[in-house]
Length: 211
Image 1 (cartoon, rainbow, N blue to C red):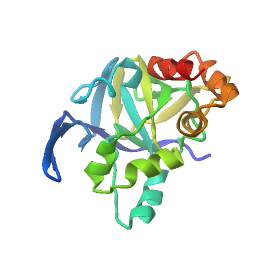
Image 2 (image 1 turned 90 degrees about the vertical axis):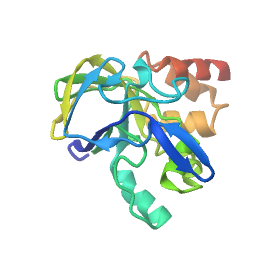
Image 3 (image 1 turned 180 degrees about the vertical axis):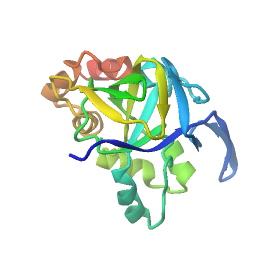
Image 4 (image 1 turned 45 degrees about the vertical axis):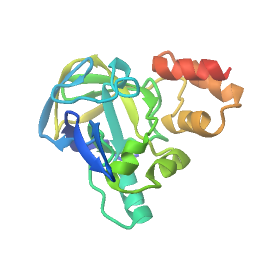
C-alpha cells in the first residue's frame, strides 16, 4: 500500500447554489486552504447546512480517497478536482477497502478516528451536474468516510498522515458500505460491524434496527 498523503485540504461554510430552477443552501462547496484548526465538532471555518444528516462529533472530518477521482473522470468524461464531493481532506493511500472503522490517524497535531462510511446524498449529483453520481456512489461503495476528533490540533496541506492504531476487528469501510447498501439481511455482517466499539452512533442505530 502506498504511503498516505494529503492531496487537498478544504473548508467552507454553507452557501446558496442555483441547481435547475431551485436555490438551495449547502456546505458542499468547500475551498482549498493551506492550514486549518480542527476542533471536536469540525474544522474552524467549516460547516454544514442540514445538521440531521451532516456534521456532529462523529462526522467532524469528511475524508475522500484521491484514487477515485480518476475513476469518476472516466465514468463521466470530464475532469473533477478535489474537493468535488465536499470533503475536507482528499488523500491518497487510504481507500475504503484498506481503512477500517475504528482506525486512528495522526495528521499534523490532530488525532482522528474513523467512525462510519459516508451515506451520500443527492447534493453530490447536483453540485457536479451529474444525475447518476449518487447512484454510482452507492453501487461502488466509493463514498469516502467520516472521522471523529480524539485530539484537537492543526492540520496543514503538507502534514504527514501517520496510522497510529489499526482496529483489531478489521471491518473495512467498504465492507460496512456493502452491508448497509446492498446486503442488509446479512446478520453476521451486521453483527460484525456492530462489534466495533468506535462505530458512529447513527450507524449503530441503523444496524440495530436491521437486527
